[in-house]
Length: 253
Image (cartoon, rainbow, N blue to C red; front, side, top):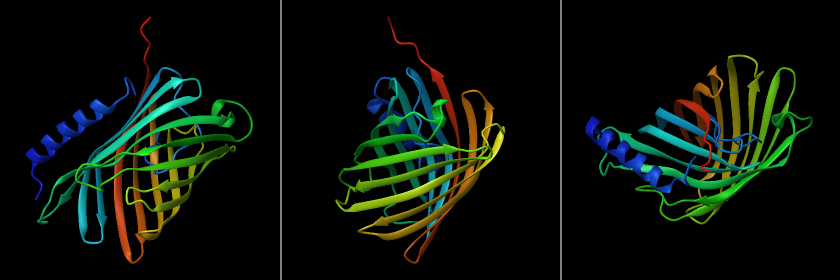
């Protein structure tokens, strides 16, 4: 069984790993698997931290603590994204180890300015980059490319995601999803996500997420959500809790 000391040591190692890979300063989009068609402003850093998460897939239970996404607006309309999460199995499981998984680096670019850039029409963005090797997880590396479109009405904001990946197992993975958010003017707004995913090696996965985002103040939000998924005959449940903190960093000179 994972003890407190193992989690503390593993968290410290995870933080060191992220800092080593962080490109100077540092979008997924909490608490979703998908994202929106927007990027961080130039010289803005956005930290998406999940200090606690819990998942159960079949009979396997895991703590996800922490998960981390670093976003850095390095140019107008561009951002760099680095992410990963630490996972530890819970219970008397043989060969149990702390793992650093879901590691990736990507570049995201706004192709068409729209409602998310305070203009009219649909916002369109693309995101692409390598799937990095994990630690005690999937071996190898891969790559992923996504196209994102966002539109907003008086009551609802919708983000559509479509992606194709060359997985670490060197098979193709096709993903389509949609995020629904109640009006952004609400300080606490309900959010939902649905995803359909076809992995050549693992089969079809359908998932749904429901939660809420609380905007504490400008640049700081808290979130919580529950995600349900089914792959083949195996069901999984995941609890996500975290925060998003954005701030501007002035460049020297």
